[in-house]
Amino acid sequence: MLRKMDVILDNIIDEHKDSTSKRNGEFGNEDLVYVLVRVKESGELNLPINNANIKAIIYDIFSSGAETSSSTINWTIVELIKNPQVMAKAQAELREIFKGVKIIDDNKIQNLKYLKLVIKEAIRIHLPLPLVPRCSRKEMEISGYTIPVKLQVFINNWAMQRYPNYWSNPENFEP
Image 1 (cartoon, helix red, strand yellow):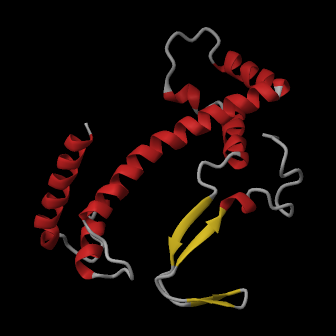
Image 2 (cartoon, rainbow, N blue to C red):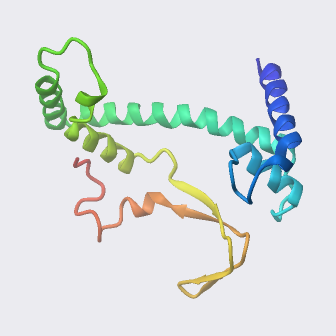
C-alpha cells in the first residue's frame, strides 16, 4: 500500500514539475504541490527540500486531517460525558431542530448553534495542534527579540486558548 502511495505521489510531483513553468504569476493558480516544487527548485528555504520531503508533507496533510477530525470528535464526546448538563442541552437542541425530520440536510445543521459551541469549546481545550509552526517572511522584532527572515517559529495555541485575559475560566469546559 505504501509503495503504491509512493509511486502515486512521485507521479503527482513529476506532473507538477513538468508544468511549473506554465503557471501564471508568482502565486497564480498554484496548489500546494506547485508551491513545494517551486520552493524546491528556487532554494528559498534555508534547508534543502527534496521529493521525499514533498511526499511527506502531502502525506502528513492528508493523514493529519483525518487525525484532527477524529481527535475533535473523541474529545467532544469525552467532554459531553463529563458534563451531563451540556450533553442534555445539546440533545435538547438536536431533538428540537430535527423533530419530525426524516432526512437531515445542511440547512438544519446550520441551526445547531449550541452544538457548534460545544465542538469549538472541545477544540479550545483539547487542541489537535497545540503548537503551529510558521516561517518568518521578513526580519521583525517582537517583544524585544529580533526574529530573522526564514526562521521557523512556533505559535503556542495551547497558551492562547488558556489566556485568563480572554477566558474567564480557561481550564473549564464552558460552551
